[in-house]
Length: 568
Image (cartoon, rainbow, N blue to C red; front, side):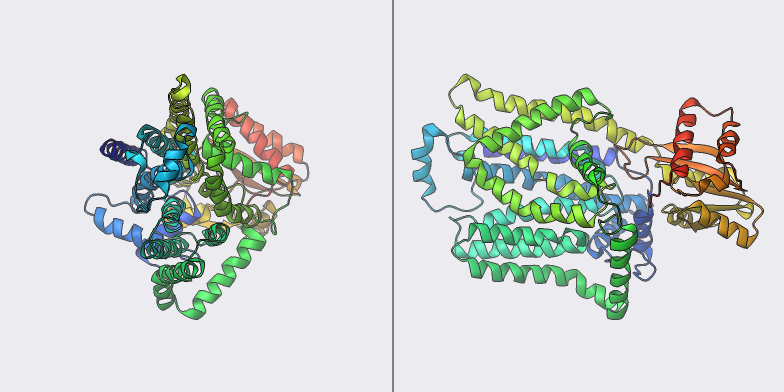
């Protein structure tokens, strides 16, 4: 049975890697991805290549992939995507092993409880598998179902295709949880526990070099150790902190040597101040209300997991997936032996959940991806638990049937999304191509926000300025006495927009379940100052060749500007 289990996991790894490669992205989609691409050629925090904290581990891995593929593929985008593809595929292993470990350690069949209590009293390796125990099929179903649900998660799969560091940071977290599980195994030898806890600390240090915003997981690991209070508590804490220090020094010392202490401190102050007070979408820079928390819930439930949402695509499959997945979660909650695993997961992810509610942007659901990683092993454990609970009964096949249906429904949700992602151009990239194709750079001036970095990388011949509203556009145009074409995007809102004249040009779209941040981007031509806002709509309505769908988005964009929809 061990050989069968390994064969299943190898098949999942090969299938997952192949599909992720086939549906990979081909464009630098925004400000951050351009920063990473520039960092492959010149790493400089002062020039924001990339911005603080530098993501040195991610850049180093991407650079190594770039050296490897350069004879075959000459794209920076591919080099930036490959770390996410490779490591997200390999994360099938810890996801499956977590489900197997929790099934083995937390689940006992009522009919076999006495036998299991006797067997658990014997010393065994923390990595020993229960595949040789009385009911190996339950452990196999738990691991394979958990790994399959993880591979087909829409949010995690889409993120693995993007030239960003989030996917790499996310997929190292299950490895961290697995090593911590081995370290805290009561039957593990002292040397084994110390080795695994130091490995946990080192992995956490490397994660900080990929995504510094994942620092709350340090607190989560500490909470688990405090709650379980193992016999060698002080020794484990010391070795864990030592591993954390080593893992952190691997990337922070070269960063200090390369950047300099003073420049690094200045970059950290500038970026942290801007993140928390201006552009970061935190509670200190944005309004706090029910809408903010509903956006977070949409990001976790609908975007990341693929749950039902009123306007979501593939909603029939989403309803069925929501039912099957919630049944698995309910089974995990109701089964008492699983509750220690649930408590550990809660302790691990609670600090991060509080952090993203306070210090991250809810309109970017990629920040909400790490917590859902640990729901899939729980779903697998629920299957294993109920298979053991209903052993030798007709209901024994019901849990794996529910798990199989959840996998099928998840695939029907995810495949159309990743296919659309691979085949369509991001709105920001489409905007750059549209301007390059239709306008003369010598007679055109563009005002945007996050798209400015894309213009600088792909169309540096154009004069592009950052602006937050039409008042900024008017001030610059008036001061420079510019007589050419002035373009701006729908991301610019303005309370006094009734004073300005602008004509609608075109709109670029992508499903927000594929591109949540810039799903719709309209382009307008600035005409000057006008006193009556009704004339603005009349001016835009003169474009009679515009499709009906574009008309709706034009009106939405115009009214958004009139109602002061300011978006960073």
